[in-house]
Amino acid sequence: MRKKILFIIGILDTGGVSKSMLSLLNVIDKEKYEVSLLMMNTSGAFSNQIPTGVRVLSDSRLTALTSGFSGIKDLISFRKGIHPLLAILSLIRFIFSFIDKSLAGVFLARISPKITDESFDLIVDYNGQQDLYYMVDKLKGKQKITFFHSDYRKWRYYEKADRKYFGKVDGIYTISEECVSALKEVFPEYTDKFHLMGNISSPSLINKLADELIEPALTKQQHDFIIASLGYVSIGKGSELAVQVAKKLKEVGFSFEWWFIGGVTNDWDYQGFVKKNGLEDNVKFLGVKANPYPYLKRADLYVHLSKFEGKSIALDEVKVLCKPIVVTNFSTVHDQFEDRVNASICEMTVEDATDKITELIHNTSLRQSYIDYLKQHIVDNSNEIEKIYSLLS
Image (cartoon, rainbow, N blue to C red):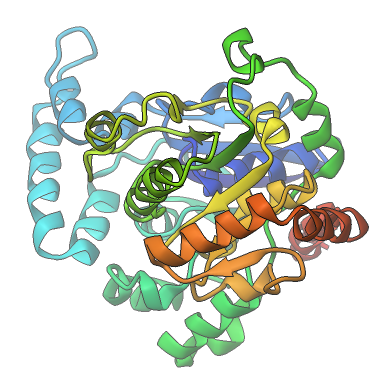
């Protein structure tokens, strides 16, 4: 009889955690294991990319409870079934989130309906926070592990609840050595539970997807240089710095397009800045792309100006495509890069980012040295999945 594994994800949206989840589901042996995925919210852009052989568990009430105010409306909609008590509790949770995120996360897990009594050999919470609390309190598993995908020192909003619930799981996994160190620093009492499992990137799959066609308008290159950035357009990703860098590049006469691949948030007026500074011909917000790799393949340079990361799967994927990279000096950057060996590392300022990009545009030999190094150091880490298998041996 096949052993049963249940993965839990909040939402399969465009972020790195979702892409990492999908990569894992693509490589896991679905002949040997019975693999299920519980999606707390089914509205994500990547929800239709779940590989064949994975059973999906979902519930419209869970989706509504994790969809903000629109979800509250759904809970009292005649069309979707009336759940007035859940609507009230969801509103209370929303209020709690402004006061104490730990309290709000635990409260959300408590009010979320239990949708299965099935028992699993292993349950893997791939998201953390309220999904961790839900797994511990409402799901049956012989073993339960959780993931945290960032530097915990930069993301301590749920620390009080995590401290309680970390003691109730069999293992706590994260994606880089620096992230392991951060967890040990914040939670020294759980040192023996912390483990490293890197994001899975499959070079063969990435290169295959990169050969797909993109829309004709973007194949007719109007400028000398294409820059790409992948991920949410947000302050956390340094996008407000990026558009200011674009302004400076245009002022000195560079001929370039900068493609932003990902949803645009409303935490800064990106569109307004572009319009005000006459950058419409240079800065292109392409939106969410289910397959971003053809766009990355066409780029001459990849720029990643994040304020913090765990271990960016986007950067691992760009390394597979062997693109010259400019990346900010966030706390975990040296888990992936060495300055002037496989990337140019810049400070989190418009000035330094502009200088590093300008240097790479001018310095063909430096760009080529990064490309050559990356070609010689492509890593297929699909064997990271063995760390999941080892829990079931």
